[in-house]
Length: 276
Image (cartoon, rainbow, N blue to C red; front, top):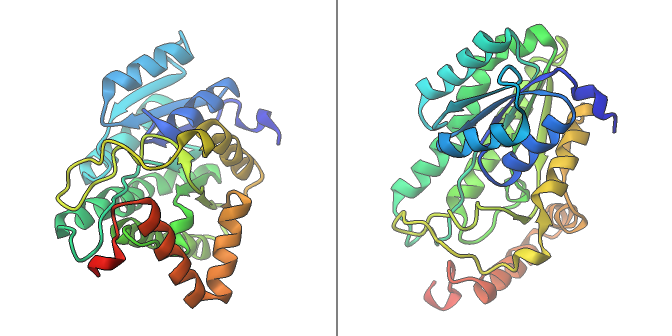
């Protein structure tokens, strides 16, 4: 990968205050990119910007709730006002859940769709004219769950399937005008997303059954994302296990349904087969 590809490029990163977004901000800053950092926690963004650069012309922070359309519009407006262009939009902001569909409140699924799907759609819609001018890139950080569903993740899987469908269609529409579209699917990653995952009543989970030490690090995911962007890849499914899961789902769907239900019911409380 040529890290020089990113020097001077204007990159918008949503969900930049933690996890993959935070790791990506640090990485792209080290490559000499100009950054637009977006998240709901403006204090965390300012602290990150101060850590990355002493030159305020290189990084701006925009308080953004991607589930709010006007916040998405303002994010893009602020980026263009400051830098005059946009080269890369990374739709990374996301929310997860842990609850069976039978038990989950519908407001939880709406919340996930608002953040994961509509956040991606709105940011991309307002950035698109500028990305077309720069022959730039739009990336959507989805998940392996965006290819193969997982028990206890109805809202999460639905939103990630929707983002993948949106981005693949966007690519088709702009295949002849220089727009690059990347569907980026990490597997389990050591990040804040599981701690913030919503339970059936909409309250944050607060803890995770996963051993974070055995998961792919956010820094490693950011490196893969940079590779995908610099090589203008169409799609990246991370880890051997992730690619194997997708392959098995396509060929042995009934078997994988049973395997995944057994795994989740054994390791998590979000789905209990004895309760339906």
